[in-house]
Amino acid sequence: MKRIYSILIALLSITVIFSACDSEDDLIEDRKEDNPLPTDPGPLTGSAGNADFGTYISLGNSLTAGLMDGALYTRGQQSSFPNLMAARFALAGGGVFNLPDINSANGFNVSLNDLENAFDPGAAQFGRFFLDLSIPGPSPTTSADPLNMVEDPASINNLGLPGMRLIELTINGYGTLNPFYTRFAIDPSTTSVLEQALAKQPTFMTFWLGNNDALVWATGGGVGPIGIDGTGMPDPTLDATPNALVSTTSFNATIDGAMAAFFGNFPDLKGVILNVPNVTLVPFFQAVQWNAIPMDQATADVFNAGYAGYNAILDALTNPALGAAAITTNEAEYRKVSFSAGNNPVVVVDDQLTDITVGLNTLLALDEITEAELAALTPLVQARQLKSAQEDTNLEQFGLPAEILTLSAGSVLGTLADPDNPASVIGVGVPLEDSFTLTTDEIGLLLSRITAFNTKISSVADTYDGLVMYDANAFFTSIAVNGGIEADGFAYSPDFTPAGVFSTDGIHPNPVGHAILANNIMDLIESSFGSELPAYNVTEFTTVLNQ
Image 1 (spheres, rainbow, N blue to C red):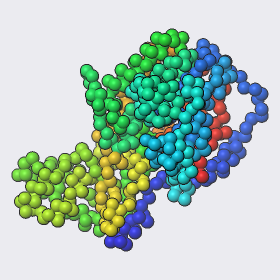
Image 2: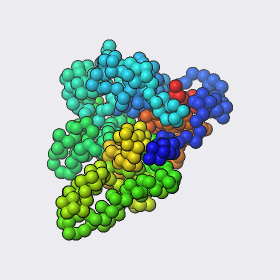
Image 3: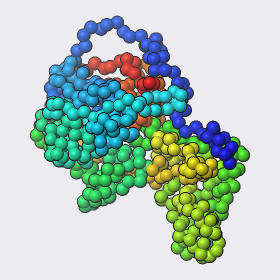
């Protein structure tokens, strides 16, 4: 069995497969050769048109803050689309745009460090991810900095906050809940982000909130609570839970209140509101494949023998004589595990399946199984393999080839649940935990909720004359569907390779992605408000860092 485990690990490929792993420096040189920079056109100029860029604020979450590579760090902040746009606004009468500068080359990794002690140097063990070409995949830097406090909170224009959900925009004392707001809240114990934004008396704004109201639930594999939709008031306890899928009722009420406050206080305000992307299409949900278990036939035969008892028990549990302990024939077939030579689906826990614990105890009482067999079957009480669209036609309507594994799954797939048991390979002999997957039912619920959020955002944009909507959902979907995007004569891929538009965390755009986004939003501003804003040459921006 030890030999089989070694073979499986040697075959298992659970990280991103790169078609090319050229260094970033090489790719920049290629872009320059293919797209020589034009001769100096002279000083850049712009005009505001019907807009007023005098006091520009940006409201949002980590996408607005410029978080990249899993960390808030200086390069990301400076490359954020609001900062890039503000530099162009300055050519058209725009005022100073202040960032809550982190002043750190590697920053503070939001997924690997202890956020509860984010201001403690001892908690800053890991900085940004970089692209480790030896894997290939993301690895964290081990030089990091704790979060710092901003000297003049009232001066800040970029109010993008990693982790913030739309429904948290109006929470008084939000600085006590989110350390990234603690850094620059006027009063962390009393101020709301909306209150601080209104105090800036903005003349122009970008507003991109709502992603985390769905994304946080999705990145956790859909194990968080689900906000209740429908008429009447939602359950505030569910929506307030940090990893909840927020109800549309809470979402709608918050955005209505925020927009009424902005345009009620500043009737001449103009701005751009962005909608919520289909998050299932970003690399975080696409890099680790549903069938990431390659085997040779000999290895498959061994594991098939191990699952023969489980498959037989599923058939036994279809017996109607078991009453409430029985499962349907269809469910039994849906749950059966089988491996073959080639790439195989990952074995996972699916909490939507019938928990067969009662059935197993019934079979034990009938002397159909032994205590030892019961112990061996207990980890499989809600187990099955992931399905492709061919096996589950419901996936076709989502435009997905299969159910989803998160990027986080890559760190545990193929490892041993029990170091002393070579058969306990996670994703093969032991089911992968539910928190690393999005199943068909979870995908359907997630996308339905995002659609509802975007319907509301579109309605809000139609309600206020000074507000236009940028379709971020269409932008990111097109990148995924078309296999990338072309900008300034160079084709960028939909991943975090050196030629990609995403940073190494698989969720946030890299500097190239932000530059493309900034150009697109400025195009919308020009067509909506008669402004003239010079576009950026995207080839001058970097993609991922490989050190």
